[in-house]
Length: 294
Image 1 (cartoon, rainbow, N blue to C red):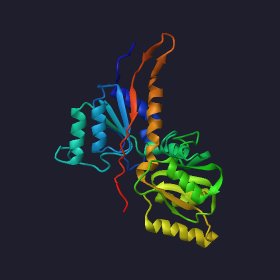
Image 2: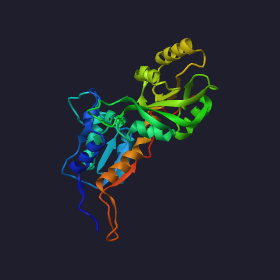
Image 3: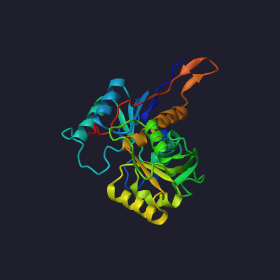
Image 4: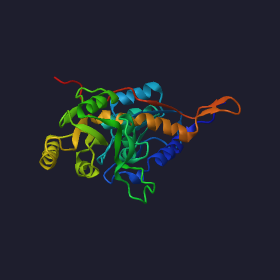
């Protein structure tokens, strides 16, 4: 027996229970971008970026909804005409019967969101938010920006960086490291996406090493200069820089699993029939814009 299809509106309500829009940063643009709330949804594709190759994948698979981490329209626009590359993408999705939904900084902060997925990928335990959400938004204190946790055992910065490279999607950039490769690290702070604005929080956390993405010369130089001035050449925190895409990709599997769980998909044990309310898939296409290193 197969149940009637869910509506887009019902799926969006579940996504917003998982990733409350109220927890997004004030500058962010999250929520439903395109789609009819009354339209049926049987297939949902999860991806990091709303770009052309991902739209191809969604339409080729027959997805009714594309959920991405990054917004298509982060800045206000006055037109979505198909004469622009973003407008053309929206038109393609609408013509193909595929909605578009964005969970960005609200997914960064959520339990089993981007931060937790990255921490899990790196094997961190005994962890807490780097910057917790206000108590009224998360009374349990388990959600917020980034995570700080511990490795199973102390290890060298070199070995830890190699572990990061193996745990996350491969990239043309690879994994960059700032610090003494022979130094011992155990406490790790992580932030998916661009994280150099959180250096003060990382210092306050006492983390030995910080894993994030999109790091620039001057902020990293000043962080390491201060650490060495205060604590010597092996002063912490050290820094491990990965690509933006790689730091956030692990969340997609959690998002797909958690949506299915909330929608109650699975076998009906009493009858032995299958009630497949929605099918989810994680995009297999790398949307890291960097394609080579010479």
